[in-house]
Length: 315
Image 1 (tube, rainbow, N blue to C red):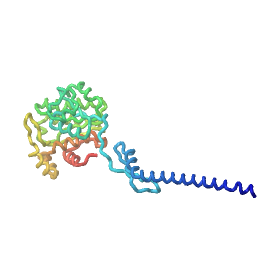
Image 2 (cartoon, helix red, strand yellow):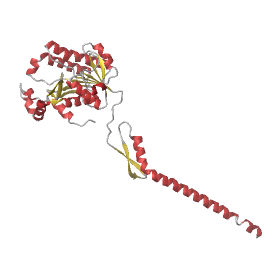
Image 3 (cartoon, rainbow, N blue to C red):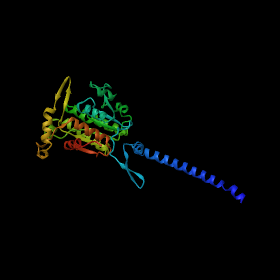
Image 4 (cartoon, rainbow, N blue to C red):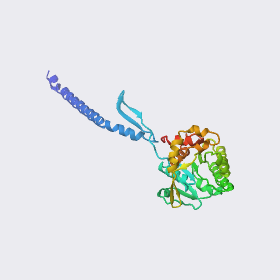
């Protein structure tokens, strides 16, 4: 009896120690759970940061499905092109070319151009963001340095004069550029050509023959990455020396009326005279998109196509 009573208190002490340990574990679990619950609001932000790469944003909603977070795909974010993507604009000092350079810079592209002096003739701040190369399109070897690392080319080169001169500038110069770009492995080439104007084709024979020769060469060299834009009269504010010509005063009203009168363009002989003018900003917008968007279809884009594409939002 005495021996049993002397050992009876010991089991009680063990039981008390077990109770204390279980209470401590319970308190630790409560602390951990409370921390997890407090951090719940920050989890979506962490997932968002972790998954918002390569221009695609995945956001986590606050709702749970079977105890787990449900990820929802959000709208594609417009990201700037990688620095390896380079665009070369031929004729960047000109009326159309300068607008193309500005449009491409606005979209975050690395832009370069070629001039005989190796610098811009334009006294505008944006021109300092363009890399200017010295070269001459009538000397193909001078283009090699300018084409180094270039992924896309837009040519706005053209001019007026005698028939032989017009063919050389509109045809030979562009053909040289197309061939050089193909040899350098350029992916896409956009050529700013011109719409047919029946009688004008005859009066400006060298101009249009040169344009058509360049178009043919482009389709041969760039069957899957060549785009030909064929606008009619291009309007906008044009700098001529120290003067600014507001061509939009005439072009804008005509564009507004004639773009809805496409059937007039089908009239024999005089139909092409009803081709609607197009704003230089629209041409620049479509040209940059055609040069930089890999899903833009190759081939010819007439003035109605230019108007249609220019009204679409860029991806």
